[in-house]
Image (cartoon, rainbow, N blue to C red; front, side):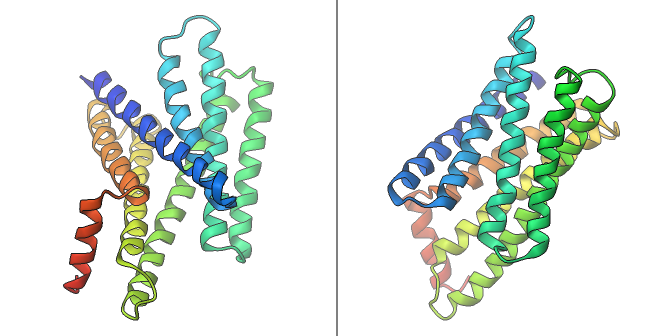
Length: 242
């Protein structure tokens, strides 16, 4: 049951992120928008990374190593792109945001160097294992930053909405993106608590992953591609002053 929960949720997560990423990349090709291209590429890498990670479970021999290398690179680059995107969208002129980006770049490049020195063996204790921990904490930093920025921007959009300077749909899209980031934060924290601290049982972690992955991806999907019924609901809610 645990395996099925994780497999199904990971597959759905990868599929949704792959589809949204591919769609945004196609839109970016038409609009020539750099930010759209970065967001699309980030989602595309995370989505394909999910598939690579799932596929590695069925590989034997040296293919396991190849799949692990591909997965770690896909996730590492996608997490670096998160820092680029959040700085570009929310804090383009903030020095501390540039510091975050430089820090994430060093983590990615340093991790690649460490893995080259250790033969890309992610299972043995030592630098390889430590890099996995640092990479996970770096990803957590990106998700926390993104969630905070989304909620701050939602508050700003809510004030603008009163003066007709934005739309209810834009506000809800931003809020849903923040909800998706928050669910992802819970997933990463549960991973840390289970793997590195042993504070949560494996069964409970898998249930948490399944529920949070569903929440994260449904919120994420609706934030980029809201269905018509949800758009109509947005307008009604805000017409009532909610």
